[in-house]
Length: 313
Figure (cartoon, rainbow, N blue to C red):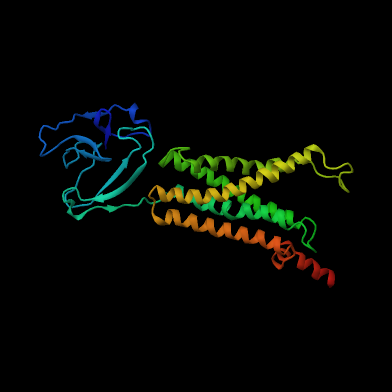
């Protein structure tokens, strides 16, 4: 049951579906300012401020209305802008408050939205996937190939293991994002969702293009790498790293988006903290390899210490 100011005056909607409000038949409440002392059904905008005044019964008149209980806080969802009478664009400011409509002397208390289970699963899958696991797998491929004493292909096993785990997590995260938008929100209504889809598509294609890469012959290519191998490396590394960087960035953007949508603190703080911890860990791991290519951590991960111990024995 929604009251909204429009170019036609104050309008009343009964929302039954997520569609353009202009497609719905609605009740237009006529403006009546005959009695200035008790204005009713007014929709006025003055000096950048809006005032909406209407009357309705406390009791629910039908199944489309909610009862207003005297003395009890009532949940009120409000939204404003971007224009004074635009009902089709995304509102510039919005929120939810709790207010006793029969005694406004107590003021209003802001109500935060609790994250739905689909949103929680999305953020708990995407934050570790793109905030740590996939970036760490890329860093291992970039930094640990030349660790002294490491068994042949040790870095590759680590790289593929992490990427497989991250690959599955980000696909599950996408599925729950789709379910969430279909059930509680709308699809592709922010830069986070659009960028996220592009990132997931790139991430999903990475193991597929790797499966078809040209393998070098024993002893390497005598005349240098062929075009197909060069093309694979440019795509797999260049586009892959772009997805990694954008993925980390988008984890933070998603957390801040949840904050801007007035979700409760847990819903946006948890993914923000997970993302920041993951990104910081990735940066430290990468920088460690730049400063000390044969550090103890890299040797332990690649099994270099174990291999050296075996040779010594």
